[in-house]
Image: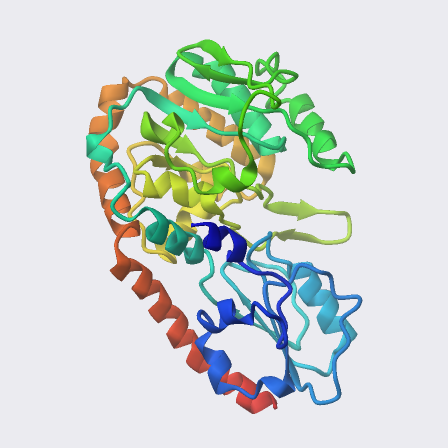
Length: 380
């Protein structure tokens, strides 16, 4: 288990990096191309300003998956080297993001690697959804402060407090103050200003409409490293619906120069833990997450409640739709919701725990490998 955390998504890997072996196992095409003539930038998160191609390089392979895919870096790299073809491998939909002519996007599955980790670490140890004793309709976990998580917490605090188990740790890991500014923008927006924000300056775990733990960080043995692999909290074991509170929640971007739907969705263990534990999913991540999981990962996420809000690319409107969905779900009893969704939860849980399902995803990549090998052969 520790090996997984030490090696999960090794970043900024080049041809001579000691952790190239991780990607050799997952990028079969590397064995069939002349890597001496290709600049490898695997799971790249180090910027591109200091990247200098060697004279023998005739192409670049750029991938990114551990952090929100670095699509802007792809474009910057392409502008620096306009005569060099760049192959961008990412597990997302690029939507309408404008790419230079020397960039070729090829879809390539990466998000499943976290699921691979969970299968290896917890096979046979996961409580099956029909063996759970559901106590809550909703659960939500928040560690670092982010605008989406703040809105979700405010929505549950306002509309579903007695039927939810949720945390707000109020930790700030952003020295630039950007996240705090974004949260204030949401709080002051007409769609969210009427929510009850009295929780905001506290740290708490709320269950049964009672703050049961002040969650002072000095008193709680908790860190991000441990939480990545923890599927045992009551939030996954006692709640029917988990709100995933993904790392990246933004869709539409309008900076006055460009307007586009940001490539996505970016998926982490936050989403996979929801599904592997048999919870129903409410997405609080980038737009189109549910559609992507259904169409690209073939997951049967057909719940009794409306998830159409997830297709709204404008962030304020999407989160307003999520709040409306929470309010609508609140109209039904917990037992009615369990009865209406338990079979979908079981089908999804069975699928993501099945080793054959992982192999089907790997097979998709193997088919993509053929395209990659042909492209690289043509370029070099």
